[in-house]
Image 1 (cartoon, rainbow, N blue to C red):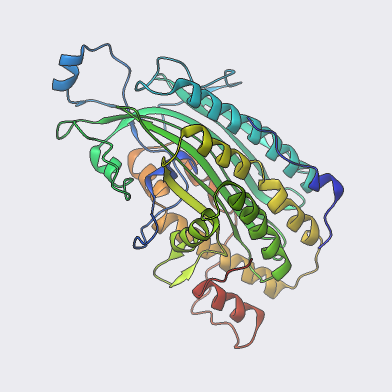
Image 2 (image 1 turned 135 degrees about the horizontal axis):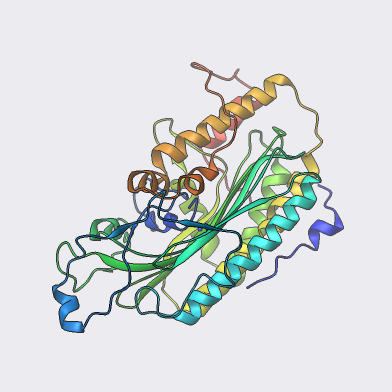
Length: 398
């Protein structure tokens, strides 16, 4: 594969929903497959009230302010920071601020790189804030020369959630609602950057990433994230490059990371009703708080800042490849599988839709066009049949 010098130099500067709600879908090693994913913000939010410690114990949040389609306020330009000291539950303000800066810097760098690769399309930005704090910036490119649709969303959320929702995010046994009374809502903070890219050419894979940081009342915190790739056809060199990029990062931070996080991604993105994965995986991790926060931050930062390095050269290599109408239709069918996963199994999307999240941000991950063809079975021995075999039996690419 030939990579342009410009792309190889795009090491994103440091410092999501399809966004931070993916943090509600962790699955630890050895766990059974759980529905999970990476889109949508749909949680209830409460205005900060001054309470004494005694009264706080007796108060149940009976009338939370719902984070709904009409609770965000559009602004022409987002403030310099959506993280404000004193908003939300008590916690690690320096880490909140640092994580948001990392996400903002990456959003700027990634959108600039994708515009350069596309050559024609530009990102449109929507900004919004919420009365109780937080907000977001959605950047979406549509109708480009290379990309049909590409989105990169930043979200900062202060709110509260039912303990049941919190328990859905505690596969590793962390009791984040310890000491709270039944029915009492759990205040939380979340910040994340999330993206999905849908290219036009069938030989250019779709790519998704999400990196996020959570805190809940009582000082509990955790990181989650991952980057994964969804091609329509198999290209060994492409997959070795993409997976090899993240293996190198994982090995640098912990020799056990890649094997664990690659297997986690293969389980995570399973379309259960078809017994096949959405794509060819990557890395996925959640509920990470087993070492100091700065150490995990640095790992998340390097993963996020390597998105263009892992993905950009593949698009540059194939964006001008010739293809047939049949190959385009196959790509659209695989996009149909992408939609099935996101709307059926992606807990962030479902949670957001049921609780009134910002709908355009929740559904940003979906492609503009997709296809469902009745009982389509690829010809034995065809490239499409080989592709399905890999989706049913994930490979180790590196």
